[in-house]
Image 1 (cartoon, one colour):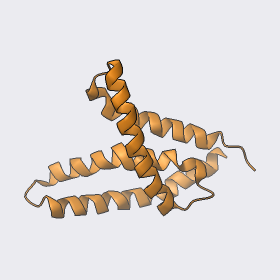
Image 2 (cartoon, helix red, strand yellow):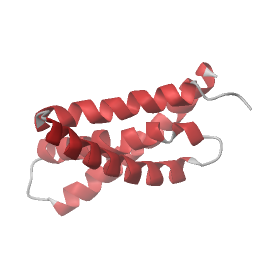
Image 3 (cartoon, helix red, strand yellow):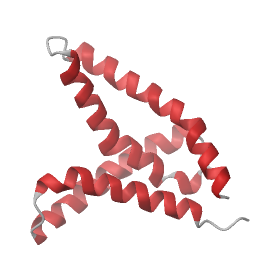
Length: 121
């Protein structure tokens, strides 16, 4: 099971790079006056904050949903989760500067562990 999940992540990693290029291209068109580095940093931030956690969060359903469905649903769910959890962590007292690293990493790790522990049917 571990090898199957790892091979799937490696194969679909190329698709994630294509999504990064698509986000970068759209951002570069929209923000044509900004420098290359600023646009690349913004595209990487969107990818790390929402797309990658959404991908790993939906990895549990890799047999039932194809890549496109998992990316679309996962990105939406990750955006909602990160926003909601960030709000409540702010109320608890955790400074917002830690949310951008902590929350996506937490969703990535939990999604990967959930996919690894899935029972073979």
